[in-house]
Image 1 (cartoon, rainbow over the protein chains, first blue to last red):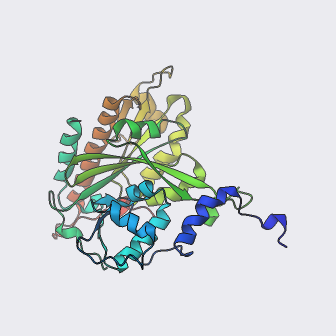
Image 2 (cartoon, rainbow over the protein chains, first blue to last red):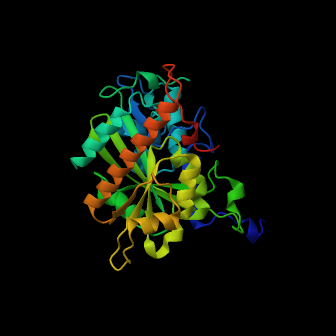
Image 3 (tube, chains in turn brown, purple):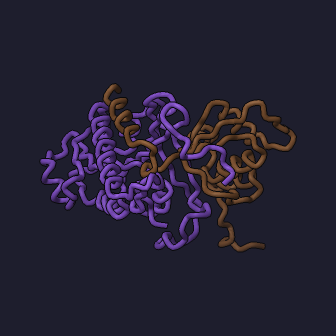
Length: 124
Length: 216
């Protein structure tokens, strides 16, 4: 019998643990961490083996018919970022999504793009 | 790296350019309100369990027992044009969520640090954080009703800001003033990037600004 002190799971743990069960306890996607604002697009015409994927994988693919940021996917699916990153890693391994990494500001090909941002903000 | 898109191939109009801007400041200073005033979509939220890997264990000082808790991230979006999008992220306001800051700050263009003149010290940690990492920021002095109005120079000297750091007055509930704060930030970041590029070797390689990257 576990002692009461071992009951570190309480009702609060539910929404935390379930998503990690979903990804079979994996806590770390392979490869580098996806930025919150990396843009994910489902690869058109790719063969999707629905029997090999979980409903959450398919939900990600549905959302990403239009280019969508990692943060927005997490928010739309109401899943923690860590879980979404693992789902995306699975989809990437199957070549079902294209990932566009954000360009760090210091490596923008042309800082003039920020002038365009300023002009765009002024029109708001 | 297996990713198809090369950063170098990116350019206006073709590949998406996404820009991350942080809204920082003390707890309850109006960060979420500011994000809500500017976003074109309903403010979004993701929740991260604190026990997630990556959460630095040594930053849980003072937490007596391991507990499952979550840190919420509020964010919004502004589309400048197709393939040019700004994301605004409110930073977690409590010190125990510092580990999220490094994730948020990675690759960020800059930050608006919200300051409430009634509790000015609450924004010190944010100012410190961005200064130490060389991330451009502006200070937005939130003009709450009933808040004593201070001159911007008073706030600047109280925060011991470098002279080039803009201080703007803004009301988080009023879109126009929030937009102006954002413009001030982007213009400031533009200047900072330009001055760093001016000192970078002109080898054709993209200028690097190591100071802009958060410490590991």
